[in-house]
Image (tube, rainbow, N blue to C red; front, side):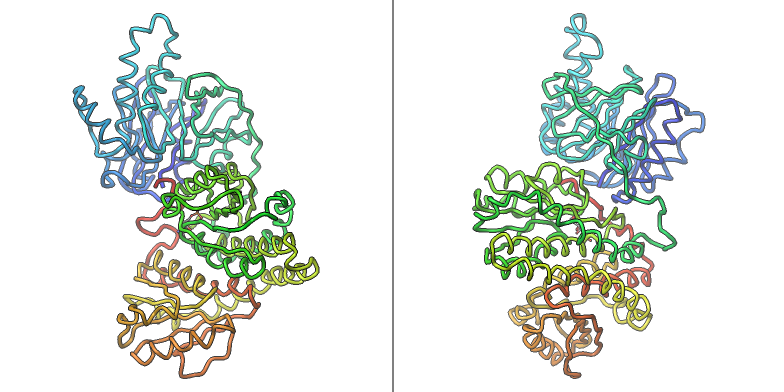
Length: 609
Ligand code: M6R
């Protein structure tokens, strides 16, 4: 998704902003741009493609100390130089992350005022609205200070916008300032002695100063090199204290790996260990009296996070006796859900910034449900706004395809199921401890599975996958959740069409796709459902499919063409049984010459609807 940076200070702003944009590249983007104040004049350099294209186009003579920058992930209008940000209206330049939903109406009104638009974007309405608001408030200019007038104009413009926005605004009439506004999309300001920096990401912001201000919705901030002032949407100045953010990320980049995805797969054991160890502290802060009254649990998420919720449903239901439903956040937010104060809504998200998941949180809060965020980014909007939170300790995940965050989400959710069952007196603490030690064991087991995978997943296995046009993933119960996640992993980085189905549902339509040579990947780790999944394997084999089985069970030889063994850890097997497909997906993308860290069309954090 789009990324924003801005800098005011004594150093060459172009260098700092470009460096910030490079750090935000992991979010996914298709073009980049920079706006600078050079000798009092606004200059804009923006290019389709990589940040380096913009970097190479910035004149070496531009040495000013104020700049904003942007990586764009196209929503309105194709990726092009023109549609790249910043967008400008005379002296004003704006970079934007989010979507302006009413831009068509606003654009029409502005065009009627005679304004000519240069791009197809929704964003371009913003600088024109600000410019127009400044012109309209000119009559007041004698009464107000010029700068207050400018801030007032920004607020007037903002009030016309519907949608989500993180904005950084540059105005060459106020060359020592950057104005930022936030609603819906993330923005973090950091301050050091002689400079301020703003970015979409706390890690990137904190690389310029440990004192960070995490902006809340409906906040405006005026940045100067030595001062940061906050305002509400009525223009009233407000106090805001910085928090100290010490990154626990090592600056070791790929740590000797060719890609982040491989590095992050290798970090799974540590992610599991850290999460399993620390979740108990999170549980201590949960309101037991509310948990005791729960009648329903809904787990909400998108993509991988949704699959983690699917995987946790059975354990939660069997151990707590409370019915659990899984919801895709983008569906849940418009479903008028039947929930109340006796419902627990668990929102799962690696980034904690996914727009649909945040909207789902809002709905759940409006309906008075108890909300619990399971997040990897502890300073994210989701983490800050939910009633309570469990932090997964996967460490920063940069590759677009989620790996270690998923394993940690399973650890957090399964551990929570055990905790809740003790609170509800469904199992005693002794039993919970025994089960928890099984979860802890997945640290060393995952290490073995990774070592074995990196050793065993060779050309022979990758050749099974790499030339396929389509792959079907099957499983039942928790194995279906793992199959769904495995399918997502392979499709998002190898661009092979993948479908996932509960094995028993196949014969109700989807089996029509099966023909000679079709590749079916089947998960069979649940001993109770193994025989049922085997039936589906015989059915697809009878129609010519090749079966690649991933299992911790003994299977009849005629049920598969290739068998991949994973260790059994009973109900916790999904924590590690996903790993072979994470590795296979990675090497399939490599074999097809695709960059697994930056798959086409995808962004790491989906901060727009
Ligand atoms: O940051 P989140 O966990 O909320 O992100 C949700 C999905 O966008 C994310 O899991 C996505 O599906 C990944 N690309 C999967 O690898």
